[in-house]
Length: 560
Image (cartoon, helix red, strand yellow):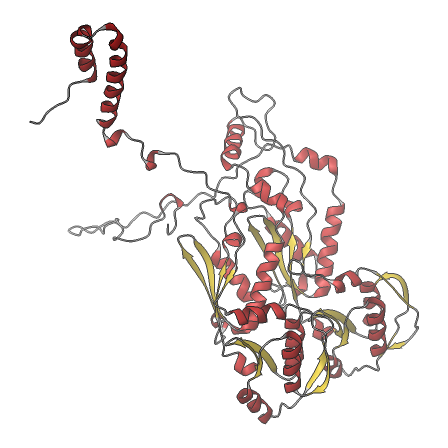
């Protein structure tokens, strides 16, 4: 048996009664202090490691609300030259080509933007051998080079790709073979604000929305040959791995930007409130029979009532990526005045372009298929209406209409317009959230989905008579919205409907509703599992223990 140190009280007793009395008084005080310090040091060294507080015993740090997480990014490999090319493609384009050789177009881009530009000679030669010999014919109109160049090349079944640090003009067939991989961070778009541990990310729903709205004929799941979009879920990662053409990647980037643009700071601040306080206050009210009616006299042990949430800003329609101006939409909402009693269609387009300084084009292909042309006469006379109403008035008599396509106002036929849809994101936070909890849990957006599809052009929705239109609720950190794909005219009807609803707002009623007690909605009860069939005599029932390394979902943990 080893040496056992005597206890600290015994040591001090021995020193006090045997050693200190033999020392002269002037030195006793110093000795007492010295020995006392030594005793405390010895006691500290003798403490067991088990007595020390461990990291596991410390309270965990508060989990940051999903509403405060950073925005997702698009990740892919690119050289410095490719980065400069993508930056140049976002600059405005000012060009005007008429029956121009494609080599001259490439030289102009290379000189104007100081970029390396190449022609994919083998693919373009094969295209010309098949009979496609059209030259460049179009104008830039100060649109981004990316948009203007794609439209210019599309007339000759050509497009561009970024390959090996160069901008390469190639055929659409050759470009469809090149399918780069990109990783899209979407943690800020798939985690609900009432799921701070990211246990139930809605990756599959976002994949469905992307495949429905971007590069529709390209996805393998829809019968395409090259497109693939797969969720990526790993520790610290919620993303999408997408393989598709450069053009489809641009569509996906724009769509995700629209979803992020629908967020508002006011909603994000409400969602970042401490969930524990909301739950505690709500449960106390419910136990006292509060509900939405509250209780006349709160119990003495009830938590203090939460302050009513601040009024939320008016919801908007998100049509473009952040920072992108929309001069055409501004013009359509502005006043118009036309004096001509009768006017050719091409002259009418030129008059609009001159008066509003926006690009206007005729859809020659659709007009020709309908037996019309630039010489078709219309009656444009009007004064005091918006440009949108003036266009409807003048074109409807001749069975024509207008759309916004490739950042231009396009005069076309009604048949052609029905196949051209836009994806807009409608902010709905001011129409569904009247208390703090409504922005923390899923609001009743489906109510508005049913209202819109039943009241506005019900025959046009995908569930009805089969047009390419679609509507879905979208709820994420900082966002309460509805994503709608529809024609421009139906979008206008939806906007007018929601504007009228907002006009019906009564401030006094809203202030009363904001002070309702916050109520936690209980999750739907899980149905009991069916009883297992009886085990035949002489057999061993299967084990209910999962095999090793099997992911479990205990405590809502998902994979993690």
